[in-house]
Amino acid sequence: MTHRVLPQSPAKEIIEQSFLALRQRAPRQRQLTARERIQRLDALYDEVWRRRDDLKAAMWADFRKPPEEVDLTEIFVIKSEIKEVKKRLKSWMKPRRVPGGLALLGSVSWVKPEAKGVALIIAPWNYPMQLMFRPLVAAVAAGCTVMLKPSEVTAHTAQVIAEIVSVVFDENEVTLIQGGAETATELLEMPFNHIYFTGSPAVGKIVMKAAAQHPCSVTLELGGKSPVIVDDLKSLKSAAQKIVWAKLSNAGQICVAPDYVFVPAHREQDLIDALKTAMLELYPGNVAENKDYQRIAAPRHADRINQLVEDALRRGAKLVHGGQTDVEGCLVEPTILAELADNSEVMQDEIFGPVLPIVPYTHFDEVVEAVNARPTPLALYIYSKRKAFVNEALERMQSGGASINNCVIHVSSNHLPFGGLGNSGIGSGHGEHGFKEFTHFRGVYEQRFDGAGAWLMPPYTPWKTKLIDRLLRWL
Image (cartoon, rainbow, N blue to C red; front, side, top):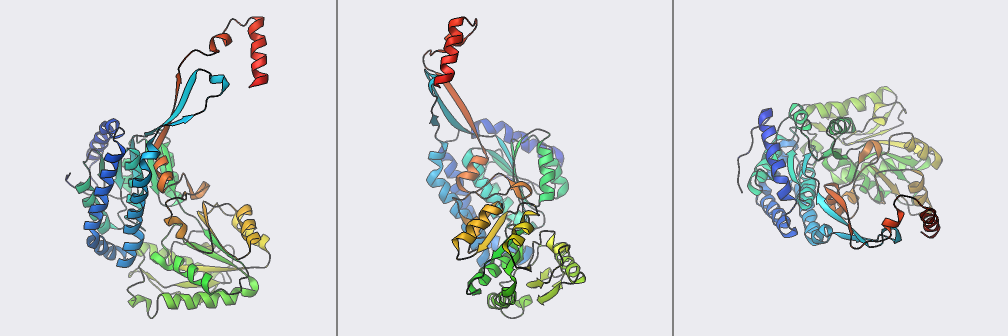
């Protein structure tokens, strides 16, 4: 199924032609059987596996992503997602009978899952393959035709992804458009049936506004400042190691990365010491020479992170670890900040980098007040052995998702819904939840034999009025 890879930033006419081909194909695509959809997903993974080394080379060229992490966070995730879909898709696609009740006597009702139509998937650069292909798996499973837009920031990876798509899919089923912001703007002018966007809240608002013009449904996987709340644990070693792993993986460029840490005031130094030890254990030696430590995706992003640190220091923050940045080399050292002013930019904006602010607290109410004063985060992390502490945190603070005694790992589940709330997103992905995002659930009603409907039609005689009164009392 090979077709040509479209040029980067194609003319608007080419984008329109590609969209029309997808729309013309959509009615046939939604009729594909579970077996036919699974065949396409198998072909996708086979090609991903064949291009495994090319993907590793591309991501190293883009931002020095370690090959092992390409396997773990990109390729394995796609394999796991496809495996779950293959196991469950047939049952997800089945119409489901629903009860009618006495009011619908003589009828049957059911819900029929149907593909929404033509979907647009806009992926970010931090996990350039996973966050493109994971929603693609859901869209193909649902029976949609799809247009893909990878990030131009990770251009080497985008090119390999384009080549994979060109081999696996007919161009009227799935097509990929490369380009920058101007190309994305042109795509958003097309009347898609669903848009799946992963990125920043600021751009998410632009996507939502564009979708409203058609209108079409959206899934927005955004971000925000995901807090970590540490209880007065006997030992902080395990918690520190997990927090550091989650914070420094992908150089902190994860939408659910721990953004700042609350710790009991009398344990603040203990936690800082444990975090520093964990950073040195996970990435020993000079991080600039450590092949396992990833780079920031572009100089402008490294500069943005550096500006956050410098602003915090100007406002009186204490640098307790790291802090060095090579903007042109896209390197930001693992950094820990303490004694932060509330109005520091690093405490207002999502960091999206390897900088970890530490916030001491005396009473738990201080934590609740601080978290609830900000927009709802994409994730909430709680480290505690006390069930009452965990339950109170979950009850009093909202988040898109939550993990207890770990960070980030909940995103790997194909059974948990992954999504935000409010500023952190709309809708959910992964497993059946992703399938549902690209699916319209049509309600179908069939009158098998006449019920009492004719008795309830005008003219309303005294007898009918009495009957309606009785029905209201009985039903």
